[in-house]
Length: 124
Image (tube, rainbow, N blue to C red; front, side):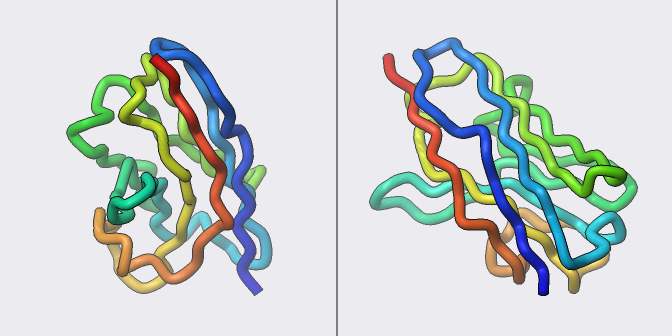
């Protein structure tokens, strides 16, 4: 059974940094696409960044130049480095894996396995 466990969230001031981690177990995740998503209260879940099996990446326009997605296949861990955080980045952040589509998509519905989420709060 696939399990994804996020960590690294917290409360920071605007301009601060956080590094999220997502450990995947129960599946050989290196062959598939993964992504980070977020959901703020009252808003729909949205893609933040995705990474393909070949490590190519894609970012939402709102985080380009500030966030970096990466993975360590040996540790079965996905990361999201978040710099220059803004109050509008406040949300629950989730990692997810897509075992169906050959290339990563920014559509949350394409991802079949999700972690429980980690809260990120950025104060002004």
